[in-house]
Length: 81
Image 1 (cartoon, rainbow, N blue to C red):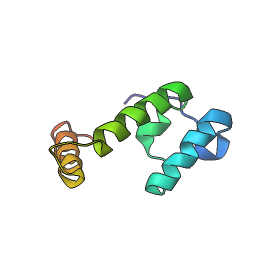
Image 2 (spheres, rainbow, N blue to C red; image 1 turned 135 degrees about the vertical axis):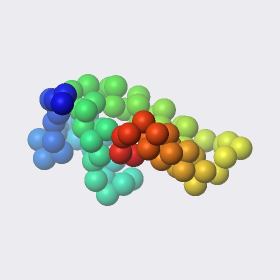
Image 3 (tube, rainbow, N blue to C red; image 1 turned 180 degrees about the vertical axis):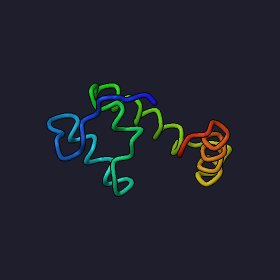
């Protein structure tokens, strides 16, 4: 099993803490997909910008349909969404 160094929310500071704080506001916690990007807060921010644009921008799919699609793809890839 792979091991990736991460920074936990209690140890975060500066730009990373700001990103983690936003994550908690959105979802109530900091998910592991964000923690694996914790060594590079700029990459984490860019990743979240892409995610939010994909999930919230105008689209032919509803937000629920997009979430369902993401869940099914994650399940097919044997990963937790």
